[in-house]
Image 1: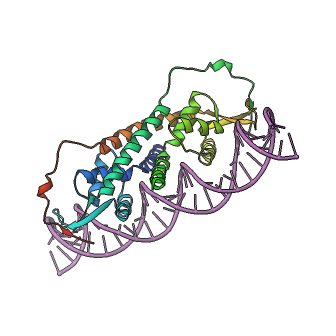
Image 2 (image 1 turned 45 degrees about the vertical axis):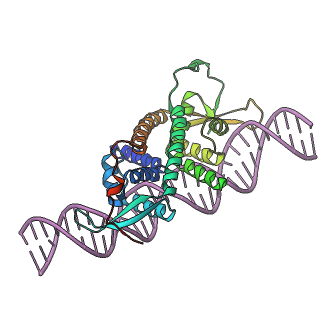
Image 3 (image 1 turned 90 degrees about the horizontal axis):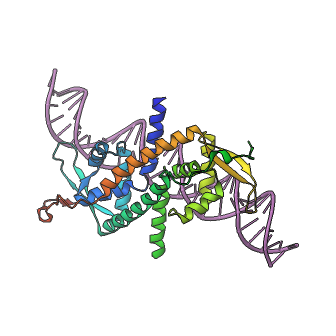
Length: 134
Length: 134
DNA sequence: AGGAAGTACCTTGCGCCGCAAGGGTTTTAT
DNA sequence: ATAAAACCCTTGCGGCGCAAGGTACTTCCT
Protein backbone atom coordinates (compact mmCIF):
# COMPACT_ATOMS: atom_id res chain seq x y z
CA UNK A 1 0.00 0.00 0.00
CA UNK A 2 2.61 2.46 1.07
CA UNK A 3 4.71 0.74 -1.52
CA UNK A 4 2.12 1.42 -4.20
CA UNK A 5 1.98 5.11 -3.37
CA UNK A 6 5.74 5.31 -3.44
CA UNK A 7 5.71 3.55 -6.79
CA UNK A 8 3.18 6.03 -8.14
CA UNK A 9 5.32 8.87 -6.91
CA UNK A 10 8.46 7.49 -8.52
CA UNK A 11 6.58 6.77 -11.68
CA UNK A 12 5.59 10.41 -11.95
CA UNK A 13 9.12 11.50 -11.21
CA UNK A 14 10.40 9.39 -14.08
CA UNK A 15 7.98 11.04 -16.43
CA UNK A 16 8.79 14.50 -15.13
CA UNK A 17 12.47 13.98 -15.86
CA UNK A 18 11.76 13.71 -19.55
CA UNK A 19 12.71 16.88 -21.31
CA UNK A 20 14.81 18.31 -18.48
CA UNK A 21 17.28 15.62 -17.53
CA UNK A 22 19.48 16.50 -20.48
CA UNK A 23 19.37 20.16 -19.49
CA UNK A 24 20.40 19.30 -15.95
CA UNK A 25 23.41 17.40 -17.23
CA UNK A 26 24.32 20.22 -19.60
CA UNK A 27 24.06 22.72 -16.76
CA UNK A 28 26.28 20.65 -14.49
CA UNK A 29 28.80 20.06 -17.25
CA UNK A 30 28.74 23.79 -17.89
CA UNK A 31 30.06 24.46 -14.41
CA UNK A 32 33.04 22.19 -14.94
CA UNK A 33 33.90 18.96 -16.78
CA UNK A 34 32.09 15.97 -15.30
CA UNK A 35 32.09 12.23 -15.75
CA UNK A 36 29.10 9.90 -15.88
CA UNK A 37 29.38 8.17 -12.56
CA UNK A 38 29.54 11.55 -10.90
CA UNK A 39 25.99 12.38 -11.95
CA UNK A 40 24.60 9.24 -10.43
CA UNK A 41 26.02 10.20 -7.07
CA UNK A 42 25.43 13.94 -7.31
CA UNK A 43 21.84 13.79 -8.48
CA UNK A 44 21.00 11.06 -6.01
CA UNK A 45 21.79 13.18 -3.00
CA UNK A 46 20.76 16.55 -4.41
CA UNK A 47 16.98 16.36 -4.54
CA UNK A 48 16.67 14.33 -7.73
CA UNK A 49 17.01 10.83 -6.40
CA UNK A 50 16.64 7.83 -8.64
CA UNK A 51 18.31 8.65 -11.95
CA UNK A 52 20.30 5.47 -12.29
CA UNK A 53 23.15 4.67 -14.64
CA UNK A 54 20.73 3.27 -17.16
CA UNK A 55 19.39 6.79 -17.64
CA UNK A 56 22.49 8.87 -17.86
CA UNK A 57 24.97 6.83 -19.91
CA UNK A 58 22.68 6.49 -22.90
CA UNK A 59 21.74 10.15 -22.52
CA UNK A 60 25.38 11.26 -22.48
CA UNK A 61 26.02 9.16 -25.58
CA UNK A 62 23.06 10.76 -27.32
CA UNK A 63 24.23 14.24 -26.42
CA UNK A 64 27.73 13.54 -27.65
CA UNK A 65 26.35 12.13 -30.87
CA UNK A 66 24.30 15.32 -31.23
CA UNK A 67 27.41 17.42 -30.78
CA UNK A 68 26.25 19.08 -27.57
CA UNK A 69 29.21 17.77 -25.58
CA UNK A 70 32.59 16.24 -26.24
CA UNK A 71 34.70 13.99 -24.05
CA UNK A 72 38.18 13.03 -23.00
CA UNK A 73 39.54 10.29 -20.76
CA UNK A 74 41.48 10.80 -17.57
CA UNK A 75 42.65 8.36 -14.89
CA UNK A 76 40.51 8.15 -11.81
CA UNK A 77 41.87 9.76 -8.67
CA UNK A 78 39.86 7.45 -6.50
CA UNK A 79 40.94 4.11 -7.89
CA UNK A 80 39.02 2.23 -10.53
CA UNK A 81 38.58 2.49 -14.26
CA UNK A 82 39.61 5.69 -16.09
CA UNK A 83 36.94 8.37 -16.15
CA UNK A 84 35.34 9.81 -19.24
CA UNK A 85 34.90 13.52 -18.78
CA UNK A 86 32.42 15.59 -20.74
CA UNK A 87 32.69 19.24 -21.72
CA UNK A 88 30.19 21.63 -23.25
CA UNK A 89 30.50 22.49 -26.92
CA UNK A 90 29.21 25.79 -28.30
CA UNK A 91 26.15 23.97 -29.59
CA UNK A 92 25.65 22.52 -26.13
CA UNK A 93 25.84 25.93 -24.52
CA UNK A 94 23.28 27.24 -27.01
CA UNK A 95 20.98 24.31 -26.37
CA UNK A 96 21.30 24.88 -22.65
CA UNK A 97 20.39 28.54 -22.99
CA UNK A 98 17.41 27.73 -25.19
CA UNK A 99 16.34 24.95 -22.84
CA UNK A 100 16.50 27.18 -19.80
CA UNK A 101 14.14 29.60 -21.50
CA UNK A 102 11.76 26.82 -22.54
CA UNK A 103 11.81 25.37 -19.06
CA UNK A 104 11.08 28.71 -17.45
CA UNK A 105 8.17 29.48 -19.74
CA UNK A 106 6.79 26.01 -19.38
CA UNK A 107 6.89 25.81 -15.60
CA UNK A 108 5.33 29.23 -15.30
CA UNK A 109 2.39 28.18 -17.44
CA UNK A 110 1.94 24.86 -15.66
CA UNK A 111 2.29 26.27 -12.17
CA UNK A 112 -0.32 28.86 -13.01
CA UNK A 113 -2.68 26.16 -14.22
CA UNK A 114 -1.98 24.04 -11.18
CA UNK A 115 -2.47 26.82 -8.69
CA UNK A 116 -5.83 26.52 -7.04
CA UNK A 117 -7.63 29.77 -7.50
CA UNK A 118 -9.72 30.64 -4.50
CA UNK A 119 -11.62 33.34 -6.37
CA UNK A 120 -14.56 32.47 -8.62
CA UNK A 121 -16.41 29.67 -6.89
CA UNK A 122 -19.22 27.85 -8.58
CA UNK A 123 -22.24 27.40 -6.33
CA UNK A 124 -22.46 23.77 -5.33
CA UNK A 125 -26.25 23.86 -5.22
CA UNK A 126 -26.94 24.91 -8.76
CA UNK A 127 -25.98 21.62 -10.25
CA UNK A 128 -28.89 19.53 -11.48
CA UNK A 129 -30.49 18.06 -14.52
CA UNK A 130 -27.57 15.95 -15.55
CA UNK A 131 -28.09 12.38 -16.61
CA UNK A 132 -25.59 9.87 -15.40
CA UNK A 133 -24.18 7.66 -18.07
CA UNK A 134 -21.97 4.63 -18.43
CA UNK B 1 16.58 25.79 -40.12
CA UNK B 2 14.10 27.90 -38.26
CA UNK B 3 11.81 24.97 -38.75
CA UNK B 4 14.31 22.62 -37.17
CA UNK B 5 14.69 24.80 -34.11
CA UNK B 6 10.95 25.06 -33.76
CA UNK B 7 10.73 21.30 -34.05
CA UNK B 8 13.35 20.86 -31.34
CA UNK B 9 11.45 23.25 -29.14
CA UNK B 10 8.15 21.46 -29.62
CA UNK B 11 9.84 18.14 -29.12
CA UNK B 12 11.06 19.26 -25.72
CA UNK B 13 7.63 20.61 -24.86
CA UNK B 14 6.08 17.24 -25.63
CA UNK B 15 8.50 15.55 -23.28
CA UNK B 16 7.98 18.15 -20.59
CA UNK B 17 4.25 17.53 -20.61
CA UNK B 18 4.73 13.98 -19.43
CA UNK B 19 3.96 13.70 -15.79
CA UNK B 20 2.10 16.99 -15.52
CA UNK B 21 -0.51 16.98 -18.23
CA UNK B 22 -2.77 14.76 -16.18
CA UNK B 23 -2.36 17.09 -13.21
CA UNK B 24 -3.30 20.07 -15.34
CA UNK B 25 -6.47 18.36 -16.43
CA UNK B 26 -7.29 17.34 -12.87
CA UNK B 27 -6.73 20.92 -11.69
CA UNK B 28 -8.99 22.34 -14.39
CA UNK B 29 -11.66 19.75 -13.70
CA UNK B 30 -11.36 20.61 -10.04
CA UNK B 31 -12.49 24.15 -10.73
CA UNK B 32 -15.64 22.97 -12.46
CA UNK B 33 -16.80 20.10 -14.66
CA UNK B 34 -15.13 20.18 -18.06
CA UNK B 35 -15.39 18.33 -21.35
CA UNK B 36 -12.58 17.10 -23.57
CA UNK B 37 -12.79 19.54 -26.43
CA UNK B 38 -12.64 22.37 -23.93
CA UNK B 39 -9.11 21.43 -22.88
CA UNK B 40 -7.84 21.58 -26.40
CA UNK B 41 -9.03 25.15 -26.73
CA UNK B 42 -8.19 26.26 -23.20
CA UNK B 43 -4.67 24.88 -23.10
CA UNK B 44 -3.92 26.12 -26.58
CA UNK B 45 -4.46 29.74 -25.67
CA UNK B 46 -3.23 29.57 -22.10
CA UNK B 47 0.50 29.15 -22.55
CA UNK B 48 0.51 25.42 -23.22
CA UNK B 49 0.00 25.35 -26.96
CA UNK B 50 0.02 22.12 -28.89
CA UNK B 51 -1.72 19.51 -26.76
CA UNK B 52 -3.94 18.09 -29.46
CA UNK B 53 -6.95 15.83 -29.12
CA UNK B 54 -4.79 12.79 -29.57
CA UNK B 55 -3.21 13.59 -26.23
CA UNK B 56 -6.15 14.43 -24.07
CA UNK B 57 -8.86 11.92 -25.02
CA UNK B 58 -6.73 8.88 -24.28
CA UNK B 59 -5.55 10.57 -21.11
CA UNK B 60 -9.09 11.29 -19.93
CA UNK B 61 -9.99 7.68 -20.63
CA UNK B 62 -7.03 6.47 -18.59
CA UNK B 63 -7.93 8.72 -15.70
CA UNK B 64 -11.50 7.59 -15.70
CA UNK B 65 -10.38 3.97 -15.81
CA UNK B 66 -8.12 4.74 -12.85
CA UNK B 67 -11.05 6.17 -10.93
CA UNK B 68 -9.65 9.69 -10.73
CA UNK B 69 -12.60 11.22 -12.56
CA UNK B 70 -16.09 10.25 -13.55
CA UNK B 71 -18.25 11.52 -16.37
CA UNK B 72 -21.74 12.36 -17.52
CA UNK B 73 -23.20 13.45 -20.82
CA UNK B 74 -24.95 16.72 -21.49
CA UNK B 75 -26.14 18.35 -24.71
CA UNK B 76 -23.91 20.99 -26.15
CA UNK B 77 -25.01 24.59 -25.79
CA UNK B 78 -23.03 25.58 -28.86
CA UNK B 79 -24.35 23.07 -31.35
CA UNK B 80 -22.63 19.82 -32.14
CA UNK B 81 -22.40 16.44 -30.54
CA UNK B 82 -23.33 16.03 -26.86
CA UNK B 83 -20.53 16.83 -24.49
CA UNK B 84 -18.96 14.41 -22.07
CA UNK B 85 -18.26 16.22 -18.84
CA UNK B 86 -15.74 15.04 -16.30
CA UNK B 87 -15.80 15.57 -12.54
CA UNK B 88 -13.20 14.92 -9.86
CA UNK B 89 -13.62 11.90 -7.63
CA UNK B 90 -12.17 11.81 -4.12
CA UNK B 91 -9.31 9.73 -5.44
CA UNK B 92 -8.75 12.31 -8.14
CA UNK B 93 -8.64 15.13 -5.62
CA UNK B 94 -6.10 13.17 -3.57
CA UNK B 95 -3.99 12.48 -6.62
CA UNK B 96 -4.11 16.14 -7.55
CA UNK B 97 -2.95 17.18 -4.09
CA UNK B 98 -0.13 14.65 -4.12
CA UNK B 99 0.82 15.65 -7.64
CA UNK B 100 0.97 19.33 -6.77
CA UNK B 101 3.41 18.55 -3.99
CA UNK B 102 5.53 16.34 -6.25
CA UNK B 103 5.54 18.98 -8.96
CA UNK B 104 6.55 21.71 -6.56
CA UNK B 105 9.42 19.71 -5.09
CA UNK B 106 10.57 18.60 -8.48
CA UNK B 107 10.63 22.01 -10.14
CA UNK B 108 12.43 23.50 -7.18
CA UNK B 109 15.19 20.93 -7.44
CA UNK B 110 15.49 21.24 -11.21
CA UNK B 111 15.40 25.02 -11.25
CA UNK B 112 18.13 25.06 -8.67
CA UNK B 113 20.24 22.74 -10.78
CA UNK B 114 19.55 24.76 -13.90
CA UNK B 115 20.35 28.10 -12.32
CA UNK B 116 23.77 29.25 -13.38
CA UNK B 117 25.76 29.96 -10.29
CA UNK B 118 28.08 32.91 -10.72
CA UNK B 119 30.05 32.10 -7.59
CA UNK B 120 32.77 29.45 -7.63
CA UNK B 121 34.54 29.84 -10.93
CA UNK B 122 37.15 27.38 -12.04
CA UNK B 123 40.23 29.07 -13.43
CA UNK B 124 40.28 28.57 -17.17
CA UNK B 125 44.06 28.48 -17.25
CA UNK B 126 44.62 25.58 -14.94
CA UNK B 127 43.35 23.00 -17.31
CA UNK B 128 46.08 20.89 -18.87
CA UNK B 129 47.48 17.40 -19.10
CA UNK B 130 44.39 15.78 -20.48
CA UNK B 131 44.66 13.44 -23.41
CA UNK B 132 42.10 13.80 -26.11
CA UNK B 133 40.43 10.61 -27.14
CA UNK B 134 38.00 9.32 -29.73
C1' DA C 1 47.28 -15.75 -3.77
C1' DG C 2 42.33 -15.26 -3.66
C1' DG C 3 38.34 -12.59 -3.28
C1' DA C 4 35.15 -9.14 -2.10
C1' DA C 5 34.06 -4.43 -2.56
C1' DG C 6 34.33 0.02 -4.63
C1' DT C 7 34.88 2.90 -8.86
C1' DA C 8 33.94 3.35 -13.33
C1' DC C 9 32.14 2.23 -17.98
C1' DC C 10 28.35 0.30 -21.20
C1' DT C 11 24.05 -2.31 -23.45
C1' DT C 12 19.42 -4.55 -23.92
C1' DG C 13 14.37 -4.74 -23.48
C1' DC C 14 10.32 -3.08 -21.53
C1' DG C 15 6.73 0.22 -20.88
C1' DC C 16 4.67 4.62 -20.73
C1' DC C 17 2.55 8.35 -23.12
C1' DG C 18 2.30 12.56 -26.29
C1' DC C 19 1.14 13.13 -30.97
C1' DA C 20 -0.05 13.00 -35.95
C1' DA C 21 -3.39 11.17 -38.67
C1' DG C 22 -7.66 9.48 -39.56
C1' DG C 23 -12.60 8.60 -38.73
C1' DG C 24 -17.39 9.20 -36.69
C1' DT C 25 -21.73 11.92 -35.16
C1' DT C 26 -24.69 15.91 -34.52
C1' DT C 27 -26.11 20.58 -35.31
C1' DT C 28 -26.26 25.07 -37.76
C1' DA C 29 -25.46 27.90 -41.70
C1' DT C 30 -25.33 28.61 -46.82
C1' DA D 1 -27.51 19.33 -50.33
C1' DT D 2 -23.14 20.79 -48.87
C1' DA D 3 -20.10 22.70 -45.77
C1' DA D 4 -18.32 23.76 -41.55
C1' DA D 5 -18.09 23.81 -36.93
C1' DA D 6 -18.35 21.39 -32.38
C1' DC D 7 -17.84 17.33 -30.39
C1' DC D 8 -16.33 12.41 -29.70
C1' DC D 9 -12.86 8.56 -30.46
C1' DT D 10 -8.84 5.10 -32.05
C1' DT D 11 -4.38 3.44 -34.13
C1' DG D 12 0.68 3.40 -34.75
C1' DC D 13 4.91 5.52 -34.19
C1' DG D 14 8.74 7.15 -31.61
C1' DG D 15 11.42 8.90 -27.74
C1' DC D 16 13.38 8.00 -23.45
C1' DG D 17 13.81 6.73 -18.32
C1' DC D 18 14.83 2.58 -16.02
C1' DA D 19 15.73 -2.15 -14.19
C1' DA D 20 18.79 -5.56 -14.96
C1' DG D 21 22.83 -7.39 -16.43
C1' DG D 22 27.68 -7.25 -18.00
C1' DT D 23 32.94 -5.71 -18.19
C1' DA D 24 37.38 -3.84 -16.41
C1' DC D 25 40.52 -1.82 -13.05
C1' DT D 26 42.11 -0.89 -8.25
C1' DT D 27 42.40 -1.48 -3.32
C1' DC D 28 42.05 -3.91 0.85
C1' DC D 29 41.30 -7.86 3.65
C1' DT D 30 42.35 -12.55 4.78
